[in-house]
Image 1 (tube, rainbow, N blue to C red):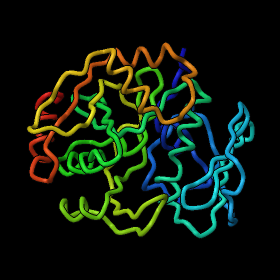
Image 2: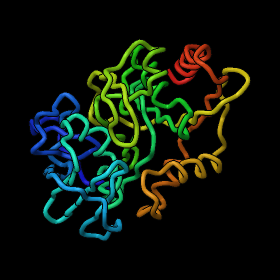
Image 3: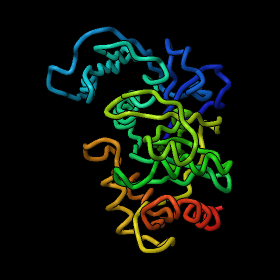
Length: 283
């Protein structure tokens, strides 16, 4: 059973992925109001090469290597995460994308689920969007935001029971997507790739999860129902951490929520029609 939640925002603290964060106030534009019931993490950083030791995860801590050098040290008992980085990184880039693996590990420890997914709000509830690399997930999230649709997050969605937590307030695009949409501030290489950042407006810190949208390519724009057994397979493959679920029944429950595959032809011309089709169905 999930812990009783406090009133989101009443504490005056800020956070992301259902975590209260401290020592990161300069990145408040990227964060959302936090509930006093959310677990706390102090964010620290230090200069160093990092990434030279094997990764590990126990019930009390973890070490995760970053793709472009450096590492993340998580100390569960001390409620602290330390980023060991070979070069200076702005707080906004620390929050997104470097904090995503922290959100996934914390979710695992807490019996939550996490998914490599974005999310948007329609009808007062969150619809998660999952897709393989190159499926246009971030592009779709940015196009939804440009249409005035509240976007919950870009690359990691953390869920407790059927509550979805807001992610960082930005979508990171590739060069061609940023050029097509006419948005995005060039950041250079952050994480494992070059990024153009599109800032998102605020959304509720907690929303009820409504269902799943899986992205795919096809000869025409259409939404196709995904059967329950297939939803479970796809959700299992889209989890944010490559470990068996702490609460298998929770994953089974999430798979009972409705799901569609949004298909469209490759190329920019189909993007607007796909977003229109999506909103006409779930909105």
